[in-house]
Length: 377
Image (cartoon, rainbow, N blue to C red; front, side, top):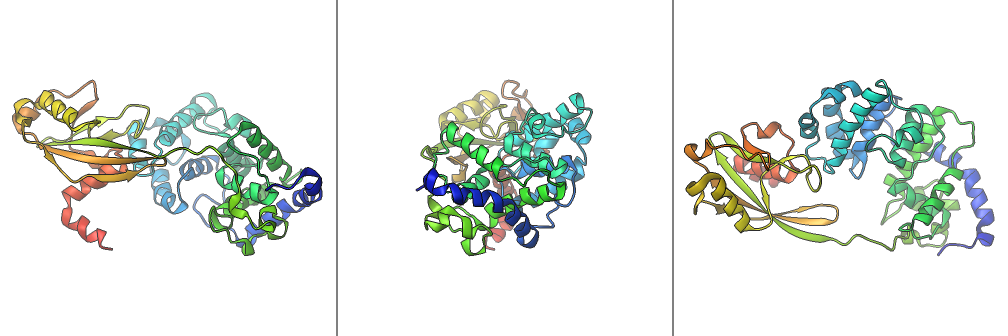
């Protein structure tokens, strides 16, 4: 329950005075330091890390960030790359539209900004794949701009500290929170080092202390001025009445193999696994069988073998994947590729950008003993 404006005026004023100072001091003392993208002001590295960290854990990103920088050390190198190279390095991180927008953004920066990142959050938001919070993070970390990030973690922190019970599913409520976030910023003028510590502090507080289910309030620098803590209802914030409903689908995967490799198609540019190479996907078993018959003729008749299905969990959808395997002989495999589905035989599948569950399944099939042993750990 949110306190009224009259009751909370003094508390809100106190928070606005204390918040930035406490957060900066706490971050320098207790926050995260030493991550590979910290400690510098290179906008390219900051941008890359911010895009990778969207809806992805730091521990996961650590395995990709260094490899990506080795392949594309600057924005010019990324802009020159082929999209397939970018998608291959991104494979396994998920949310693949991030990789396509990353590539487009690099090309835009080189083509229209002389290879230099715009210096303000307002300008950065005009680039592909950069939303308001990401733009604020880049501007604050790289250029010291006095602007607040407001991703989901920060929304949770601020709603709890301020006792803001507005429904964030509503645009008006989100706008109000934007205004409150701006009021909490360090007083102007602010030095770049303080702005970096403040921004990182917001991230660290949401990730380490003010977590969704079990906040560690005794270690929080805002414990004494947090409205939600005072009311003993931390997990009631933030309020969101509109939730996405989980759905489920079954996809049939056609696993066709020949001496020439595995038959892979390029996924459409929108939707799940957009732009990745993948085993052909069908909504029904019969569709997969008819495709195999049309592509490879009588060689496919009665030769398809169903393997056990497995589940892949997306943010708001469960995919039940059912592999249907086929060995195609040399004469049938020598036929033309499928231009409509951008499909053909690929012997280099391990170097391509494949969806993580498809790659894992193919590796399991290729090395079943090694995979079984690794699953025991």
